[in-house]
Image (cartoon, rainbow, N blue to C red; front, side, top):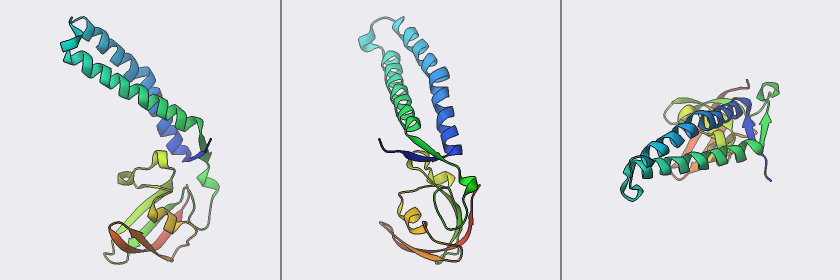
Length: 156
């Protein structure tokens, strides 16, 4: 089985989500299904069908999280230094717009672009890997080509 690289923080977030699903969400949906059953005819009971659908989603997410966590390879980024690699927090400036952004390069299961968590397999992350502060990178994406300068690289 393929190992999935995760940061310690990413592993902790996924683990916390799994615990919440198992200890809070699962029991709540079981109670909701039981209450909906008490309303009688299940064929026309919208509450029952909605609760069953939510239960299906919760059980699927639990299985997905268990699979991810069982294959996780947690990488201690605090011991890393130097060029851009997994776990690096990279501050970039867009050479066209002078807009600064900071991203952390993380594994696919914990990636969230809105939170600045950049998927290791994304075009930008692949372009940054191995580069150093002051380097320029050009990233080709479906939206066109962009150039960035690396302002800083941090590991925490």
